[in-house]
Image (cartoon, rainbow, N blue to C red; front, side, top):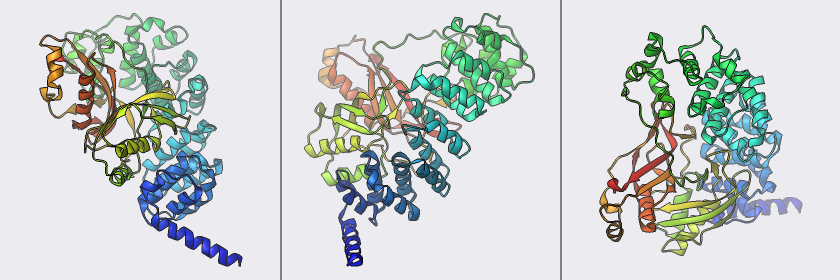
Length: 513
């Protein structure tokens, strides 16, 4: 009788698996529905089931996730199942996920690392024991996620990375700190300057150059003394970084053929690309000319007034095809625009989403927008990002949402435009058509208005997210500019000649309208 009951249960689950869809699973509330989804022959349905189980913390589904993952042949589904296993499971499950990841392309290790960074406990220990020697490459993203709202542990993390002689991790931590506008403790920086590993010292030197270029007077002993020590037989890149630090600390700018030779090379051009006047002010005219830059120093631009604080990226990437499936199920072709109030937990799972201030012409489209938000794993742009934030939701009618997760062989990195990263470039000029005629009449000819937005531009040139950091007193103008950006196409940013996803600030003044 027990065998018959089991067979009937399996038959029922198989029948249910034929009827569940990604759209139906997006609102699933029971383990039975999600189990049926994991057993579906459709890959997107299985991926959606794993995503929903992870976001809703359905730990009862762990046995089924383990079983499904063991026989999964679709990498896009395995990506969701591995995330779910790491976030829902035990340390043993993390070990199993790392082992399973080895069967897939290298970027899968970064997926595991991101999920580990979102765990509440043991993230740094797991990083050291299981990830630091893996194929992961997105170290900055790992530490940004791990340290989000946990900045107090930076001294511990810095000390551990140096004790492990972990150059990749140290570089990632420094970039995370620089992106977030926080500083690494003086003691750790002083120790790092004396390390035997060239990459550790180099990362520290250039972190200090960029961090303290505005006001080097705040650098105190013992770090100041360590920076002024001469060090022979170090790579040219580190040598010139140390020379800049010497100048920043009051040393004279002296002509030296070594520096001009270094600055004329490709390494320096990449290092100083998009560099601010804060650092360039310490170069001689001959050095600027060696890099092909004007000999006249640029005037440092003042910071934008009203610049908004760090935020979260919401909506985030979803399993490829899921957003389209939701739009098709709701028959939604309209757009939406407005500010939603979103709260997330420490892992980035959306806990609440209030979309009452998001305008759309269809209730179905509003439901799709909310589902897309709730299916997201929020990504912080800074370790200082808050858990409760206003989020701009924007979609131009029939436009792409640009939130499909990329192919399995693509590393998911989200970088800020700086240093060796070339900025994205809009491929068509802003025309008067984006400014409503009524707004133009109100503005008049002599209006002096500046708009600034922080956008995420994908590696294929699409705008995924946007938020205003400086707006005009004309709400219609602000809205139309956001919609314009949402439907615009960019030549993507590049790092090492490869397109990358970037956070980029784009500004326009009245003359560009």
